[in-house]
Length: 100
Image 1 (cartoon, rainbow, N blue to C red):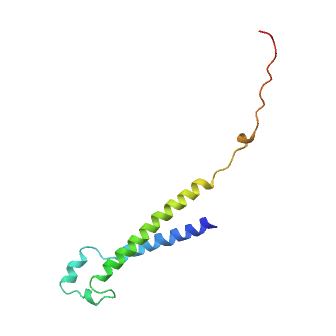
Image 2 (cartoon, rainbow, N blue to C red):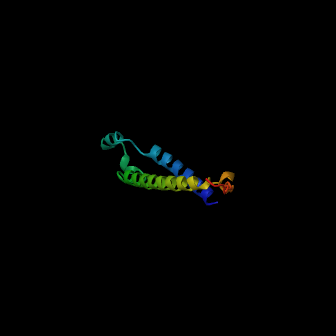
Image 3 (tube, rainbow, N blue to C red):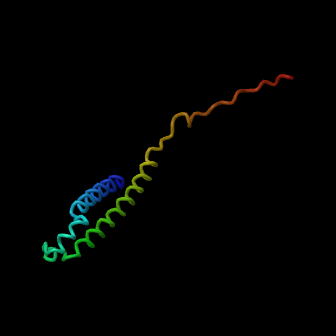
């Protein structure tokens, strides 16, 4: 149950990272804003969106790595099954009491 919840959270964080990276503007977009492209009239102000989106991407990336390590650790311990050969008892051969 916990494994399924972590996998769903993992996929949601991955989708959030993809969305946040696609929303962000490139470094060259600041050049157009300095010549009156109207960046100050945006939702976050002239520089607020960069800081917010950068921090949100950083938080999602940290969550992504933590979830990756947790899911990897859980799945490495999930498949441990004892084989039938480990439970078979081998009888020791009877030694003859012959004189040497």
